[in-house]
Image 1: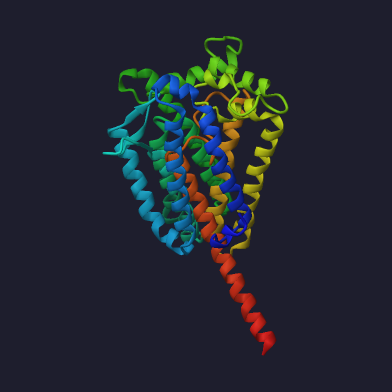
Image 2: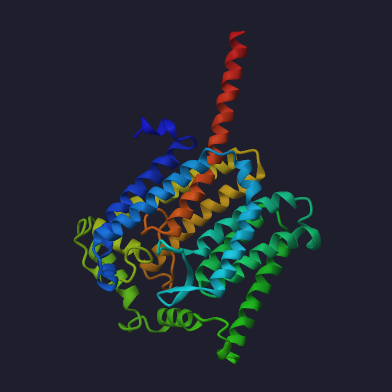
Length: 392
């Protein structure tokens, strides 16, 4: 592997972790899809091949992005943001429903689906990073400073909220975190949080007062998940998903049941995605689960390390945004599977069965590696210059 890494610029540790997880995802997806075979038919190999194609596409995109100067990413961020808005509106008007949620766009001719929010959340965070730099001298002002930074966040999160509350909440919180790092005044952030809570309360009241308008089509699902977790923890029917996930973790014990030998994965909906961590612990055990957590923490550390090394604020904000996003998604998946959080739809980055989420994660890591590659190149140039001066 070390020999092939010479073709990959940037942070080697991130490359090793990324390639390790992508390779392991092929094994785990093949093992975790029995429930999908039961529901939709086909064979495990069919889904493995589909996931393999996504892995290849994701890696190629990641490789191409990491060879580009990060300044082009900053320049394209505005176009990506407006494209994200267009995709979200198209999804709102012409949704393709999967598991009762209209979050997907069907790609013509190939029969595949793309979750527009996966693209939108990354596009927003990159655009937000650019705007924080552009407006850094005006952030203390509402008009011309803070509003141009805040409105994109409200727009994207508002469009995501209709069918995906958890993703909207995560993106909103990460955006506020990056704004805080970007030195947005605390009083403005507190005002936004208060206004957001009030707006959410108003939306719920409008939905309850006029249910025919269907303002929040998945409100009943959200309410049931929260209430079932809080009030009916022993109700087997209402909490079948979370109870099976916790049971799978219990059965995994220290060393796990072995690859392909897990039983609860056959009763866990989306054992290959939303309940990935439970299926993983069942087959590979708690020791492997701790190792997996460490890998994500190391990944975050290396990304933050790059963010602190760069001398460009855009790159710092972009790296921090991406690092927090990846760790948050992984953490939510683990917290749901262990019964701490209500059931929600966040899968494991780089490991869950592929699709738009996997590809956009590869894009995000490609951006980080693009920044790391620039830093590496500058270091090499400085070293050569110093050696030439020493020789002269």
